[in-house]
Amino acid sequence: MTFIPTTRHLDHIFETEQRFCQLYSLPIQRLDKIHWSPLTVIWKAVKFLAEEKDARILDIGSGAGKFCLAGAHYKPFAKFYGAEQRQYLVQESQSAREKLGMIHVEFEHKNFTQIDLKEFSGFYFYNSFFENLPGSDKIDDSIEYSLELFYYYTRYLYKKLEEMPAGTKVATYCSWNDEIPPCYQIAEAHNDNLLKFWVKKM
Image (cartoon, rainbow, N blue to C red; front, side, top):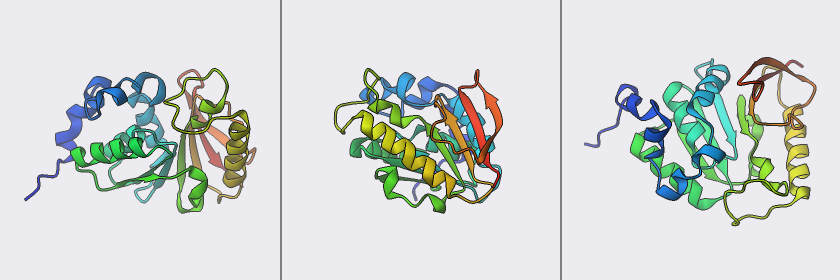
């Protein structure tokens, strides 16, 4: 019989960034400080996004899956999904999920534009579009970057969020907020306004 860790058994893994990062290979661990969200930020975001037990949360540009994995630990009754363009990061995410024995987490090797956003009740957005800006820190050179893509993705997400039903929640971290339509209002702001929580009002 395979042992599936419980939330209590996993608590120590989520106590520090260093312990959590040990789920990954060394090259992925080195990306943590710049490209993955801190656990304290994730905790605040999932408390907002997953208040309801049936919440379905999409991480747009999920990288190595840190937000989804930590989110599923903090809110085990919600479902977390990650969309990521890089296959090897999806594989790292899936490997970490298996080590943790989590069942309410899924990762897909897709551009977020290939996903029906209306399947979700909330979204986490640690600005994955910034990689397309000249001079920005990039994870690698395996995908195309351009200023045109930055504007395209921003406009696309803006339009799709505009089409979502009232009550849709979005948590943004280190974002310029260009992707958030005016029909969303700020519910809370934390971390010197770097972390913002939005709710669609109409």
